[in-house]
Image (cartoon, rainbow, N blue to C red):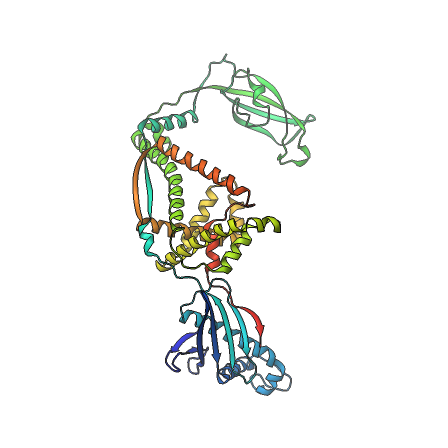
Amino acid sequence: MAELVDASVLGTDRAICEGSSPFRPTIIFMKVTIENKKGLNKDVKVFVDKKTMGNHIDKKYEEIKGTVNLKGFRPGKVPKEVLKRQFGKTVFNEVLEKVLKDTSTRALEENKIKPAGQPKLDLKTYGEDKDLEYILSVTELPKVELKSIEKIKFDDYNVKIDNKETDKRIQDIAKNQPNFKDATNESKAKEKDLVVFDYTATVDDKPFKGGEGKNTQLTLGKDLFLKGFDKQLIGVKKGEDKVVEAVLPENFPEKDLINKKAKFNCKIINIKNPEDVKIDDDFAKNLGAKDLKDLKKLISKQINDEYKNSLDRLTKKQIIKEIEKVKVDEIPENLIEDEIKILSQGMGDEDAKKNRKNFEEVAKKRIKVGLVLNEFGEKNQIKVTEQELQAEVQKQIRMMPGQEKMVMDFYQKNPSAISSLRGTVYEDKILNLVKEKAQSNKKEISKDEAEKILKDSQKQELDEYRVTKKTEKKPEKKLETKKSSIKKTKIKKVSKK
C-alpha cells in the first residue's frame, strides 16, 4: 500500500510515495474531487498528471532492464527504446493497473468513504504521455448511530439446578456403567449378562484372516458384535462349547467374504451378572472427580451449561431483534437487490415478483443488522485471531466423533468454509461485547422454567417458519454471510475512454 507523504502540496491534492529504492522514491500527485450525486451515491474524480505516469513507466523499464536478455545487448544495457518496442504495451498496462489500484484505494480511505459493494471505474483519459483521469462511482455505506446499542434491553438467564436434578443425572450415568460379578458355574447366560469367550471362525469350513478371538466380551441384548450373534449365546454355561452362525457384514475387511455365512466355534470362558453401581467417592473418582461432592458440583454445572448455551442463543436473537430497530437513514439499493436475489434463489420469475415486497422487508432487516454489527465491530477494533479460529475448528471436529479426519480435511480444502467460520466467531465476539455494553435484565430461573422458555421459543420459530415457507425456498442465511457484502471490494472497470 502506498504511503502518504504530503497532504498539502496541491491543496486538496494527495502525494503518494512508493518504490523499492529508498533513494529515488516516485511521487504520485493525485487530485481528488468528490461529487454527491444522490443520497449515498458519490462520484470520486481522480487526476494523476502525465509526468507522474511517465516517472512510473520509466521506473518499470529500469526494473525490467536487468532481467531482460535480448540478442545483441549485454544484460542491463538494453536501451529504453528497444524495451519500449518489445514490452511497451505490457509495461503500460502493469503501471496503469498499479496506479489505479493505489490511487483509488487511497482516494476512498482519505475521504473516509466505505463502499457498499464494488465501485465502478470509468477511465476518461489515459495512455502514453497523457494525464490519467478517471471516475469512481461509489455507493457509500450509510452512517450508523451506535449510541442506541447501549440502550438495548435483553434477558440474561441463570438456571438454578435443583439437587434432585443432579442426583438423577448421576444415577443415569451409573445405569450406563454397570459392574459385573462372576455368575455361579451352573448359571445360564441371559440378557444383560456379560459373556467372555474365545472363538475360531470358518467360511465353507475354511479358516480366514481375522477369524480368531481371545477373551472376547459381549453384553447380551446389545447386538454389537455381528447381527443376531449374541442372541445365540443366551442359555450357555461356563465351560460349554457353542457354535454360532452369523453373516459377515458389508464393511468386513476381507472383501471376498462379505455377506458370507460364517461359523464361530465358541468356548465360553466366563459368565458375569450385572450389579448396580454403588454411587460413592470411588465411583466419582472413576469419572474424573475428586470425590462424590465434587462430582455433584461438576454435574450441576454441566446441566446448567446445557441450558445456559440454549438460553444464550435466545438472548442473542433478542439482541438482534432490538438491533433491527436501530435507526439507519438509508440502506444502499444495491445491497437490497443482492439480498433479494439470495432470498429468491430457486424461485420462478413470477413467484419472485409476487413475493418481492416481503423479500425487500427481510433484506432491509438483515442488511441493517449487518451494518450495525460491522460498524460496532470496527469501532471496538474486534479481530479474530488465528488461535480463536483454530479453537473453533477444533470445536467443530469434537462435534463429529469418529469423523475427525474428514472434518479437518474439509476445512483444509475449503477456504470459504474457514472464512464462514471466521465470520461466525467474529459475530459471536461482537454480540458478546454488545451484551456487556447493553442493559441486561438478569433472571434466575428453574430448570422447568428454562424448558418452558425454550419450548415456547421453538414453537414461535416453527410458526414463523410456516409463515415464511410459502415465500422463501431456502432457510435464512446466518448473519456473517451479509457481513462480507459490506467489506471493501476490488475495483471493477466498466469502461475506457
